[in-house]
Each structure stands twice: as structure tokens, then as C-alpha cells.
Image 1 (tube, rainbow, N blue to C red):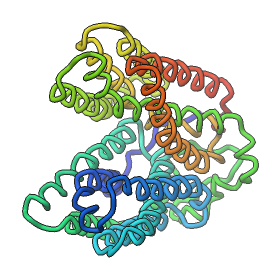
Image 2: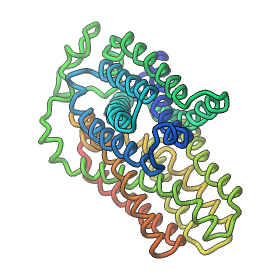
Image 3: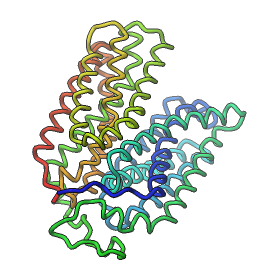
Image 4: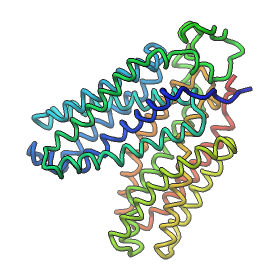
Length: 411
């Protein structure tokens, strides 16, 4: 029987929050900075796709492999090394002389970011409770919001776009130093104690490093991949992120062309959607600790489906906007809570690897499904967005139900 996680160390919480802010910063930089970048490097507008594709491929590869390397490096060194890679990559962005060099550094940035994402999620799933897990993911959204502000301030001051990346690179390198200096904290006995004791494996001896305890990662890779819950969980993550990204990406088009809203109003409503996602993670992180993760997850999945139905209705624009806000608020805790409950579905021995695979699947869902939805909207109608979201939301409910039913005991 599991017990509640022990309160995490404040220093580790702060570092985890800052790390997720740092994950979001580069995403916000390139959107504002690209017009200046393409002029400086003399490349066409669509060349940004090459940079983003390179980063996505490396991110997916790194996030999948992170779960398999955690047992060898330990989370402290994994985070320190990955953040260092991200800092070096952003320094490369700031000094790049050509697009080809930037693409190379995009690969490095993707490798670092994917490992940070998967590594921190794997650690937090064992060491943090629902509140801090949700808040950690909320800070990613804060980073995405701060990135454009940094680049806007740099360009507004008459400086080169390179300074925007230089500022964020300096922050990443400082964070890498902080991770390196706190390696012993990440490897100490506290995180291991947050997981329920395994009745089969010997327990951690107080005062000994975590490596002295039998790691919960001794199961073979093949054993992990043979678990149906691993693949069902990966599919659930892919579908969830597909809903989140597709809604944010195509809502503006639906509101303007399908519901007749003015561009300025539609833009404000899309911002409201992303804002509801942030607020939802802050609020529901507290709610999940009081009501339990299972109950909040079920309510959130049903809420996403209900919001999608509102978006699908051929109703006035305000109904669609209400649906967007419902989807955003309901979806907020799903990603962090699915991550938090991974060990309940696959067992602790397989949890770290599975989280890495789930992060990779989420990236794949974010890359492929929204693009496919765009093709569908172009060939059918913008009104097809709502029904598509309903189908995805119902699929997510089914995947979660089947995955929970086939879950392995957390031992």
C-alpha cells in the first residue's frame, strides 16, 4: 500500500520549477526572433521548418532514451549534463553564421531538452505530489510566455536577435551549474523514500547513497516493452498532447472563419485558452491532493470531452469560446497526473523507462496529429475541428480506462 510522498526539498522544487521555465524559453524565442534571423542569415521564411524538425527529432530521441540512461547517470548528472547541452546549443544559436550551423545546434538543443523533460518527469513522479507535479508543468507555460518578452525587449532596444539567445543561454548555463552543485541532493535518500517500499527488494539503508539500494530499474528493456500498459500509456500521452496542441493551433481559424469573430477578439480568446491551461494546473494541483489523482483525472477527461462537444456545436461564437476554456481548464492536470501515476500502471521497476517513452510519444503526437487535423480542415471545413476533438477526447477516455484496467500493481 502506497504512502504519500514526503515533502520535497525546497531547493529541488525551485530547481525543478526553473528547469521547466527554461524548457519553455527557447520555444518562445524563435517565434518572435525568426523574421530577424531569416534576414540576418538570408534564408526563406519556411526554413524555420528545418530548424524545428531537427530539434523535434532530437527531442524525441533523447526523451525516449532518457528513461534508459537514468539508472546509469543518475537524475542529478543527467539534468546537469542536459542543461549544459541546452546552454551550449543556445550559445551556438547566438553566434551562428549560417542556417546549417543553426540546424546542428537545434539537434543539440533537442537532445538536451528531451532529457531534461523526461528526466525531471521521472524524478518528480516519485518525489513530488500532485500539487507540485501540476505546478512544475505550469511553469513550462510561464517559460513559453517569458521567451517572447525577452526577444521583444531585445529587439525593441535595437539589439540583435542574437542577444535574446545569449540571455537565455546564460540562464541555462547557470542552471546547469546549479544542477551540478546539487547532484548529491538529487541522489540522496529522500527521493527514494518518496516511493512506496518494495516488499521484494531490500530497502535503502539510512545514510547510504541511493545507489547502494537496489535500483527500481533492474528489469530488462524487453520486459518493459512487453507490457501492454506501456504502449497504452504512450498512446494516451500522444492523444492528450494532440488535443492540447490541435485546439490551440486551430482555434483561431475556427473562431474567425467558422464563427465570424474579429481577429483581435479571436486572438484574445486563444490566449484565454492557454491561460486556462496555466490556471488549471495551478488550481487543480491543490484539488488533486485533496480529492485524489484518480478522481481528478476522471473528471478532467470527461471535462475535455464536454468542452470538445461545446466546440463542435454549430452555435454562436461565445459557446465555442466557452468550450475552449473548458477544454483548457479540464486538460490542465492530465499530463502531470498521468505522469505521476505511471508506476501504478506499469510497476515501479518500469516507471522511469516508461515515462521517457511517454514523453517521446507526446512529442510525436504534437508533431503529427495537429498537422493531420490541418489537412482535414483544409479539405473538409474548419467546422470539422470540434468533431475531431470529440473523437480524440473519447479515444483518450477509452485509452485511460483500458490502461488502468490492465495496470500492474505498483508492488
